[in-house]
Image (tube, rainbow, N blue to C red; front, side, top):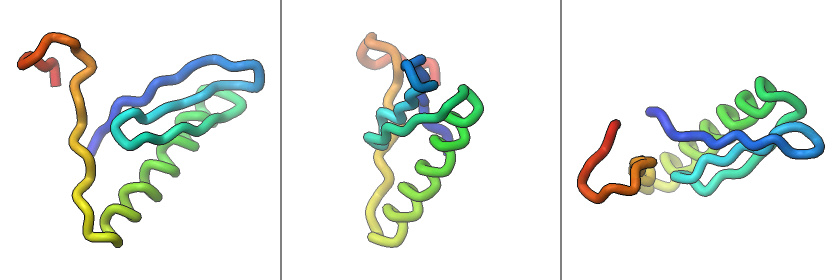
Length: 70
């Protein structure tokens, strides 16, 4: 399962967001931010599974209704 991540430079490194799962984390470098995102996504997905809840569906990053690149 793949999710869009958004990396943004900040004073102390990089902020990373996973919009479909409402996750925000950070890292000192791009690689550290990506690793933090992977870790927290796994934890989040495990929590959905343990709670017998459906994982939110990925949303397209396009703004055109009805059309998706994914």
